[in-house]
Amino acid sequence: MGEITMSVKERRRLEVLARVRDGEITLVKATEWLRLSYRQAKRVWRRYRQEGDQGLVHRSRGRASGRSKGISMRTAVLELYEQHYGDFGPTLACEHLVTKGYRIDHETLRRWLIGTGRWERRRRRMRHRQRRERKAQEGELIQMDGSEHDWFEGRGPRAVLMVMIDDATNRTYARFFEGETTVAAMDTFERYARRYGLPRALYVDLDSIYRVPSGQPSVADQLAGQVRPLTQFERAMRTLGVQIVLAYSPQAKGRVERRNGVFQDRLVKEMRLAGINTLATANTFLDRQFLPQLNRRFNVPSANPHDAHQPIPTDINLAEVLSLEEPRTVDKDWTVCWQNRYLQILRDNPQLPWPRRTITVRQLRNGGLQLIHKGQKLRWRELPKRPPSLATKCESKPVVSSRIRLPYKPPTDHPWRILARTAWQRRPPPTSHMSHSRGAALSCSERDQDNLLHVSRGHFKRVKHGDILKEL
Image 1 (cartoon, one colour):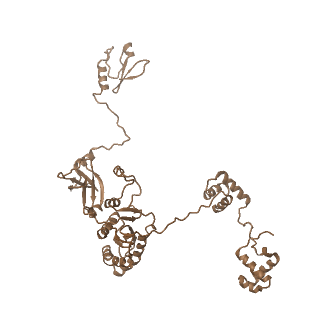
Image 2 (tube, rainbow, N blue to C red):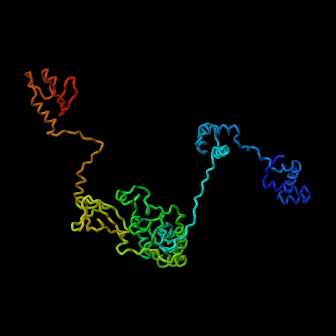
Image 3 (cartoon, helix red, strand yellow):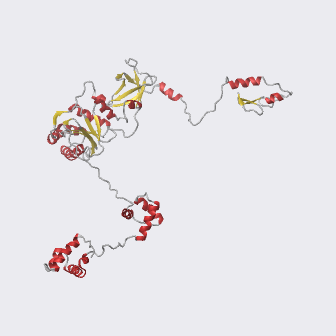
């Protein structure tokens, strides 16, 4: 007797009906255990008595499905796949099999290929993540992020909350701005640094504020060892000695993400109760009431009690470092163009930059401008309008398409023109009484015909019969 494959449900029926067969329980009791109606229990019992254990196996087991494609079609499709689509995936192969007259589902073809060993299961493994321990000291790592939300619930404009949270202690600082911009990030960092000091590192996301998505560094940046161009915020952090650490997923900086959720829940409700609907009043509410209460309740002690914040150096002006800087070229009249404004560098500067040299234009966050040359600030004044020299220089250059080449006309002292005039003066006199003009036929001797000067629009060539053309 061969083996019988049974499910758990069928094995349970076998065990209960065996008890009925041995007289241990009645069929009525078996219906309670098997949770069957009495009529269904009688059918199962009758089949068990007639066929034995095999009678409890489902009748459809081992039979082909009514929707199966058939052995002949499966064999033809697999042969066609082997001949023409061996390196195709199931989905792409099914698209091409339609043109051959075989319309099957890609999952059906996948099962056929797996059954014959032509395809392997490719399951994407989830990326493994592990919990990162907190930093040991306060100020060792600060997570920073911007949270855009309807903070005023329609009572005011939409805003962005710039949040900074200490990785070791959960101490939080936040401020509202109109948008998540470079100026907003710099202003938030300056306020944090003046209150607690410079952190050792900032943990930020891949926003364009903190890194350049693509591009090649300039020659000066390459000489300085940079492999990619820096953003304005990166340049400022490098000057202050603060390391930028990039987070490649929201889960990596989960501490600040969770704190954003706290703000979006608690802060929104607190501002609703206080009737706050402007950025100014919201920032005042944050500094004086909400943040002190939040930090007292949710701060945790650090493993190392020593503070890792760096003091701000006395020779560094945070407002100047945390600003926008761009290189500009000094023109020949010692003017610099900045956003359609023309700045005149004054003569009495100790170190006057040479024309066509590059200086740095620094725009402060309060709107002020500074011109920097070799680390020194230059004195300048703004011109009321565009300098005439620049306007004349730009207007004097004709706009000529690079695809059009003007014909070249040799000057009067060109060697070819001098040779032409000399040859014209030495021409033989006319033999007839009829006068002729330039270009008319001239009578020449046989010797002159062997050595004839051809004149045509200033270009002269000496031609000898049976010889190569020679240009003079």
